[in-house]
Length: 512
Ligand code: FAD
Ligand code: NDP
Image 1 (tube, helix red, strand yellow):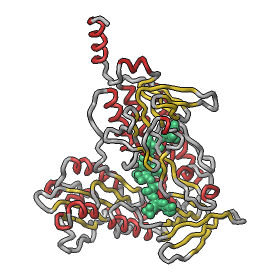
Image 2 (tube, rainbow, N blue to C red; image 1 turned 45 degrees about the vertical axis):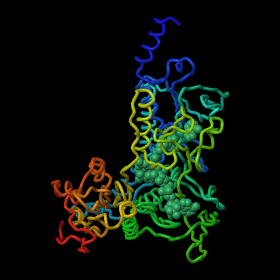
Image 3 (cartoon, rainbow, N blue to C red; image 1 turned 60 degrees about the vertical axis):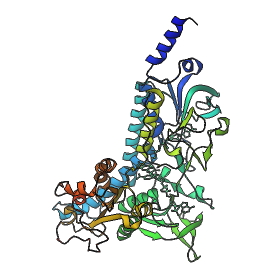
Image 4 (tube, rainbow, N blue to C red; image 1 turned 180 degrees about the vertical axis):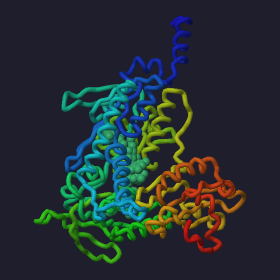
């Protein structure tokens, strides 16, 4: 090659905004193939196209055992965050109607009930509109989208088939695996025949009625709470403890709040079988693992909320040589697998939070690193999260237990307090579980390690504090911040009682 030609080639490489190699453009059909069109995959695909890459994105949803299926957009949009938040809102509105009477509204029928079918239809209509906008967005952005499963043939080749048609192949310089997960079913008699999961509940064609919710993680608690708020009768079956991994005190408060509202709990219990009775209802047999006592009860619906498994089995990962752990993909800090040009983002990666904004940001940052020369890594630390129960629980940073374990009990200070939201007084709502705490270092300006809040709209309250915590918030700064009155978020600016002091953390005044 002449010197002039060489210079032209190197200038072409330099002027390209992306890092896909010049030779790569010739060698493969696409710069990037993304497997999975959920929060992570779509964010990655769109960002890659914005930075000049040629991208092909596969998304396909296998129906659930009872036949539920949905469109483009992944778990969050179709069977996760979005329908869950809408059902949560529907249940909060039921509470608000009763409160409205105390505030002087003439709500004639105090026995008002929601119309489940109408609610499901409204939720599903919203989801369909999001599916549509997502497809249009992909078309406008020129992300090629194929509604098919994709599986590896070799490390650069993906095989797929559209609507049962012939098998086709596409090659790519980079492959991003963003296939997420699906709910687990327990290996017991009747689990898949008679039980449903969060994949089914938001489009369930009949009223759930008396519901057994198995599992006490995010999904279990949230589903039980919106079902209760909508007038059904949920029982939560807890294998070990509620919200394992979260701050214990906050989790126990949350459970107490749910019990106060009429959610039943079966502690240290696991299911043994589910059978359909002659009357169509479900007989569930179960065992208490503490007492070893066996028992049974009858429910209209059984909802498994026992965690999610990563969807690695259809990917034919051995053909690409990608390492897995349990049912997840192992990645390094750049989201690269052990095969350097194959990456994974979102719920499918091992040992990272399964949250939509985490999936989105990590997908976007990965695309920028691949195609825009960025070096920025995803920071998985101090990710804020909310459990959408009627009094929500939101937190960012360390639990009290983790702070004690990391820094030692003598090196942390916990500021805490109960509080009384002003708007709770007129309808005489229980303020018993409105509580917040800041876990901080004991010395200096007292850097805050974790913030925890149970109360109305906790997610909205903690979101801003999460940015402050990531910026090095201290107790000194927090207490120097002037509150917005009368809000519940301002309670963070008035935290003055430490656990160590032994002083009573309940507020002295009657009325906020
Ligand atoms: P997904 O969104 O699951 O997308 C993966 C997509 O890939 C799916 O469409 C899947 O069908 C498809 N796919 C799988 N295999 C293949 C293949 N081989 N080829 C092609 N396509 C394939 N997070 C929050 O932050 N806030 C919340 O309030 C919240 N609520 C939730 C409520 C529920 C009930 C659930 C279940 C989850 C909730 N989450 C919430 C978690 C959130 O939904 C997930 O973290 C997020 O959707 C993960 O995105 P993802 O792109 O990794 O995977
Ligand atoms: P989790 O892992 O949070 O909880 C699973 C629950 O099921 C635990 O209580 C677990 O008990 C129990 N369990 C597990 N196996 C069995 C079994 N064989 N029999 C009985 N009980 C069992 O999973 P989820 O499905 O609730 O949530 C999955 C993820 O989705 C979450 O980690 C979260 O990241 C995301 N999500 C986020 C939401 C949000 O942001 N608001 C809402 C919903 C989901 P044990 O503790 O004993 O293991």
